[in-house]
Length: 265
Ligand code: NAD
Image (spheres, rainbow, N blue to C red):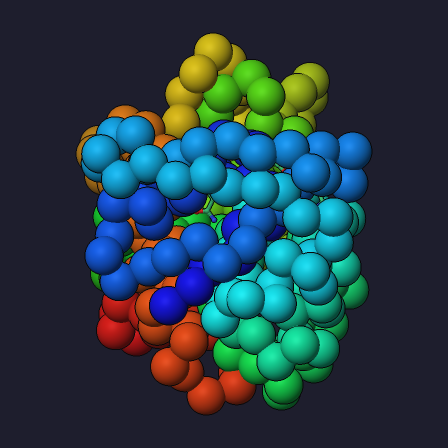
């Protein structure tokens, strides 16, 4: 199975290529980054003793020619061009880029009629378990327990809150019959007044090189339950993206998430 990496020079792209080089089931069919870097080459696979050269293509279409699946970890605002190119070429898609607009998400639903698309804000197995646990905890504890979400990421992250924190809030909101759009409070400052019962608090911390940390606190009278996931490095996301790629190439057209890939639904 041949993968095509979009955002090949990025933090995630490099780890995905490195882990793909170590996987006997996978080959690197193509890779690209911003057009200015086209034509450059670099080597991957040193960690596994399976070194090979990767050359960056000019366009997504060119990079996809010899590939079965596009894996995109780029930027909101540009990733949809790559997804469109893959869908038009009949290639499966694994989309990890976060911060997509509602318009982009609607377009994904349309493109998923043509090809399988796995779109997940977080490809880590542990975080996907956390999504399930948060829904279950919220169902049991109910609105008597205030839900407050804290996420910490490195100081280079551009979107806030993280896509994972948004999904965690959606999991709690679904279980509590709240709406993420209407009932989420992003930070607090000044005379905010008493905390409404029908509210999910969201707080984004940025600093250093933190790969990703999420805590969902259920705060009641006299006790608090906290569910935390800490990513030690980016390999848990990269491994998950490759598991998703193997799922996607055999799937029917449709929009999937990592819960589908892991059978957690
Ligand atoms: P990064 O900035 O290190 O890498 C992004 C790369 O995309 C850069 O090399 C950039 O040059 C490249 N790029 C920009 N425009 C492009 C284009 N038009 N075509 C091809 N490449 C282009 O960022 P990162 O830390 O690797 O994260 C990338 C994205 O993945 C972010 O949205 C981040 O939030 C998300 N992310 C998702 C998960 C997950 O599990 N879903 C995990 C980590 C990061």
